[in-house]
Length: 196
Image (cartoon, rainbow, N blue to C red; front, top):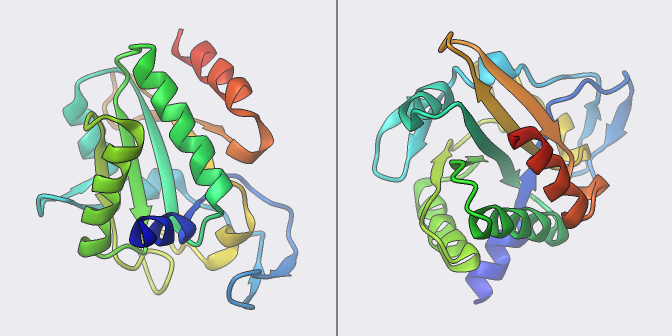
């Protein structure tokens, strides 16, 4: 379980919101970052990621394959606080337990294939289910990339996105939820209201 606890300790969510312009020092690496940078979700969902079975696809492709109008997406990256991950896991377990039949997608950034496989197994163990999808990318915020995401996101809180796919397959409505702001019970109430 040392490997499992170590993996969870090094995960972090990213939050797709605009933050007022200022600079901060990253608590993890000491890098001074510009918190005015934003995550372009439209571009992000069009970028390519890897699946565990070796396929290369975009998040939009994956959501389209699910053939449902609603899905829940967790975006995570290396460096998370365990409490944040635990909140997300509890939410997933409750959603599965209440049989909402809503597809769950985990997106991992800065993760190699070996870690992605370990993480998938760990998630299956923790939520007692294999009924979710997982995509990952090896170097999303560590270097040059399509969406130009910088390391400002290390300062933000986790995100859960409720995705609504309209008749126009190119349009995905994203409703962010902020894990540390709410208790698990509050978060579930918010998700339930969105799914109704």
